Image (tube, rainbow, N blue to C red; front, top):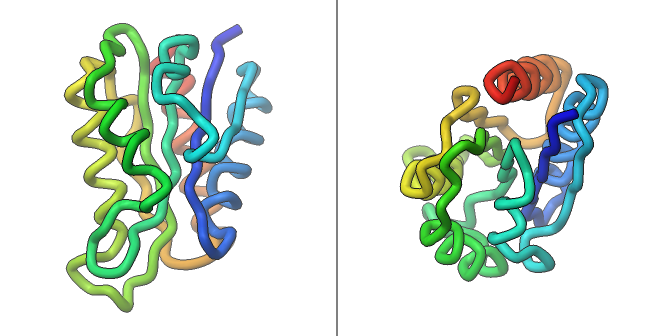
Length: 148
């Protein structure tokens, strides 16, 4: 049974919803999943999982969540060779060029660890609707397929 760790950062609750959707699908696909909030999580915990997922928001004009800065810095220093990663996030298209840039930053951070990207990153506008849920379910399925 593959193990997965889903870490989220949220202000509005939308990214916790994204994390919940991914977690539920991973469990449905037979994974043992741990879901935690980013400020309560040590990035090194990813070393204990087969699948590593971050779901985080972008603050203001492209800033990472303040409560996730240490996690982000620590993540980049890890060796996650042999792990599969995925990044998803909810944002607001109102911010134009800064829309969901945290997703891109975390994707690049994971690439520095040597982990394998298991699915294309997913960017959701605001609260997940049915189309977004379907995207996130496909995202989770791809992560499991890559980890198998």
